[in-house]
Length: 88
View 1 (cartoon, rainbow, N blue to C red):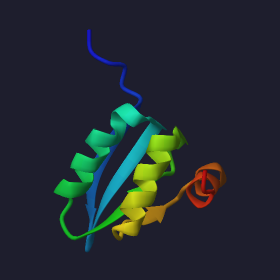
View 2: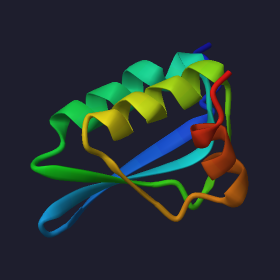
View 3: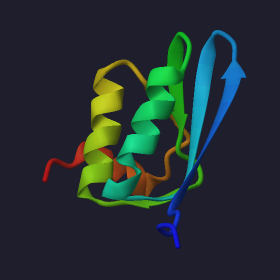
């Protein structure tokens, strides 16, 4: 039996950007999947976090790393925005 999936990543084109929509709860086990999706994106990338419910410490760190590499954050809830701005 496989691991329980905590997120769903949907990739769409929104010229000139690729949008990665991250739904669910981002945990350390999901970082590899998110990193692969980001690396396979063409051109500028936006992260649609409108359906992201939570992120553990490792999840927050990968989101911060992707932003530092140029990803644009879209539609993050106030909770997720606070997590991204707060240094632990």
